[in-house]
Length: 557
Image 1: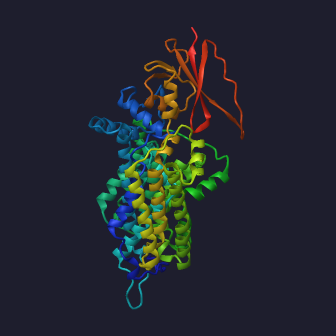
Image 2: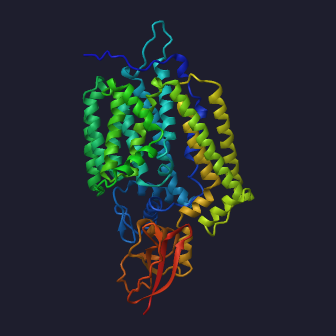
Image 3: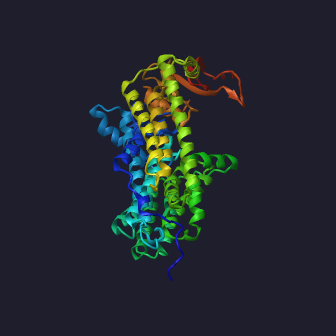
């Protein structure tokens, strides 16, 4: 029996004016390219992943078990293969190794953006997603309507705050993000491009398994089978065996690569999870909630059931991992698609509120970045530069003409975008998300150009490793028994030592320990531990983190 309930969308042909492709590509470039060039891998997950890639490239660990100083990587190995292979191909051509490792992940982010656009396009083409027909004509053409919704979904993805830093790292989660978008695409196109959809749903769970998210891949395949089985489209129903094959392939890949990694953790603070959900998924979650309410009678239709299933599984994974933001990142493509379907039902007053908030907030952010930059390079005003020097002692500002030109171009583009939004094309369906997406892209561009040198100094381990190198000679054997993966990777990448975590090795003359300087909320200088057979040489710290102290010992006999 056909569901004849009307959709809540009421859209005229004037409202589905096409967003110029050049403008959309510039949006994507302004978001994608900053942060790719001219920086070191940053602390924690970024440097840890890069360390495993470097270990593979140097032949210091097995390709099936990447390791740093004997510490084996958790989860799948595919992301480390990608980075190491790119380094092997591009480093001999003179490319910086960190940039070479980062390029495949930049392409994965670009692929995610493209897959979200095409997935939304095909979901919006379904009959249940189409707007109501007008009595005397003039309603939106189905294809034009679908393109406008797809443009809105891509803008919503760019506007998502949670994707900013995590989307520009070289971590396994970026491979998982692209695989999740691929699965969304495969489910969306099944009624229209049968073989595209089959290949996508066959590969996506396996890619998730090979990048450390095997369980998530199996759950997504299972959800896809349930949705496809009850679909009114015959081609979608015939996709069920391919989803089953994808789930089986994911299990085989996870077994062969030893990628079954259980990272369950109790959720100790529900309030912190609520705060994470609010800021990490802003501004798409209010729009997604608007969609759920206004389309509540159509939730079982594939244009909503497909992204909603992916959203719920990613949210469950995040909660099961103790409120992990990296697991929650997999929900952003689905949230962006759901947010786009709020646009046909959004009230003009809500859209105006979003526009004004975006103008004031992101203009203030841009002004703050420019003030900091002028203070560092021109001394006007003087106080911000002084505060930066206190937070980053030893940092010396470096003038980069190309970065300044890019920042100026981005600022002028933002001013033109604000003028355009307040002047013309008020009927465009995607207009509500233009300023949030443009503001996020502008803020990221300015931060990764004008403030990149000081951020790189603050977030990189290179200054700390340079201090260790002043005490420990190159080529020495260095014991680091209590270092984190990121710290070990920093020693592996920036140093030239033989690393081990076993203090019983008698051929190692040097040992480093990590010691915290803060207890509770009050700083407290701890007494350096006395180790039998070792003599304390000195203490070093990261210049921008007074709580991260490294003790350097030398064997006393």
